[in-house]
Length: 89
Ligand SMILES: [Zn+2]
Image 1 (cartoon, rainbow, N blue to C red):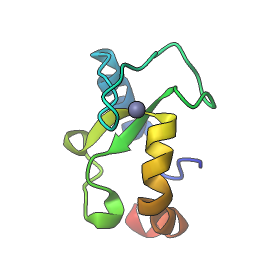
Image 2 (image 1 turned 90 degrees about the vertical axis):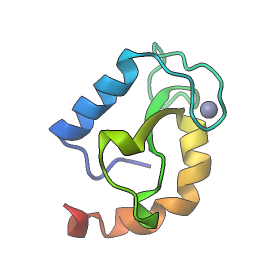
Image 3 (image 1 turned 120 degrees about the vertical axis):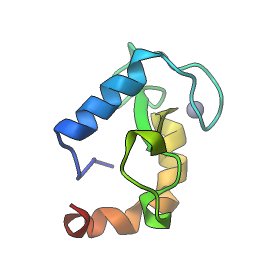
Image 4 (image 1 turned 60 degrees about the horizontal axis):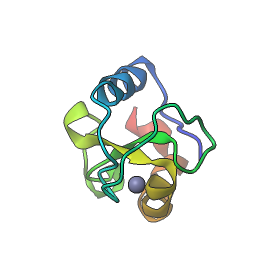
């Protein structure tokens, strides 16, 4: 899965979240921030309330997660949004 909405803001949010080295908000396990995509345990930004469910694309609605945890969740929540992401920008 690729982030179709990537922007300077997304990068800023990502850096901001990574700064405090939080645990994965989905499984609660620590994240190794040295890991890089496509490692399933690498850091990705997850939307706490999926945008598909009315969540906002703001820092408040974002948290750190493992790529694998995000994927397990996003397969359900994100797929329709990615297809029409242009309409959300
Ligand atoms: Zn996790």
